[in-house]
Length: 301
Image (cartoon, rainbow, N blue to C red; front, top):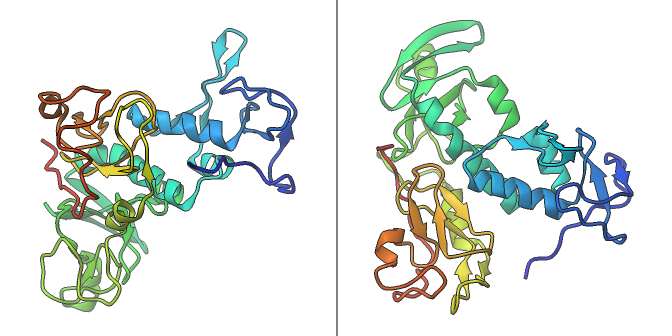
């Protein structure tokens, strides 16, 4: 069972308030609550739960659900504020940022030509594999998300279009050096070894952090699904590879906000296939699928 999160009473960066939680309406006197920038009170648990529900619904903006009289507040909280006041764990941070990146990536990938403005250099780059972009604002908001990464050579921000290839060519470094410069999207070192590759380069310690998360995440019991215990708490969507977490409520089927497919969190089959031999609240005929050892790639179709 997960430990319930709570605030440090000595944290002077937070404004503590003595009133009910504006998300859950809980008024437990032993529960320490803090005030968001919009003035509404939350606990780490309520804020985490609400924001996870927004991500599950395909929304990457965090909107306050509290009521001001008969009207919803509707204030938009920054990711930094949510991360701090939700007291996100390292695992939750990775899940949030991967999901935000997944939800935002179709908009970025729809652009075939983008402008680079780096060190007063402005060029246009055409590439079916990756594009150099000016995304300083997004990088500030989501510094570890997977939409874009900094080239280890020139620090330009790059967006990788071919998500199955870790070998990325940087046109800026190549132009500056007069020879092809490639780096690894995964470990962010100059490329070593053969390419293209989807697993790792030959640099020491190069490994897939998303895959490690799937391998090392804790197991959970789905209380509403009869007979399902020891199920990995995070799964990669079998269609597009988006990382999703079950909130341990309702049935075993999840809707992926990225590819719009519904699949069984337990056996990892599409819902239509799983339901041929099972039902939403019963264990799958195939049992609990083992931890995933690879992450599906998606063409976007």
